[in-house]
Amino acid sequence: MKIILTAIVIMASITVNAIEYVPIRDADVSEPAMSITKDKEGAWLEVTAREWQDVVFTDDGEKSYIYQQGYNYQKQKGFLKTYTTDRKLVNEVYTPESGGMVSREELMKAFEIFKNHDAIHETLAKEITPIYIFGGFGYADKTPNAACYLGQRCVHVFAHTDSKDMIAHAIVKLNDQTIPYPDFDGLNAKK
Image: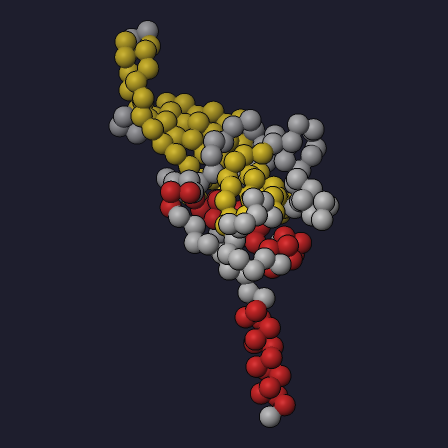
């Protein structure tokens, strides 16, 4: 009998402490990746986040090209690839200063990392109303050797409720799935 009562109390306390999140709407997140290549263990190698077609003026007249933008996790660089309309590669440029917006898959991974971080989870668990998670805006440190300096895929992630504008704001580093800045605005330091 004591075992059953103990189990009920534990289950009740888990239920009481469960964090309720507002479902994420498609309109609030980036588009799904065009493609994602992975290694044998399933880690991301390269994510093509977007594609578009444009006409440019060349010495030979107007030409139409297909462009792809994304991020290569092995090279730790963003890329811009240019293709002919029949998908023949014309040019590819990799640079640590670029990469564009993250894909939906990258953003969902950033949200997961954010919600599972011990200190952030502790902050979120204090809320009694549903929590909204949003973000995806790129972040780059200006100081060499800092966690999110050139070539790192870092994004802002925020949490708020209907009654509180901001309850948590962190920088998530997708390269190694860490949070170098768990209290980016010092919100917890102000409490």
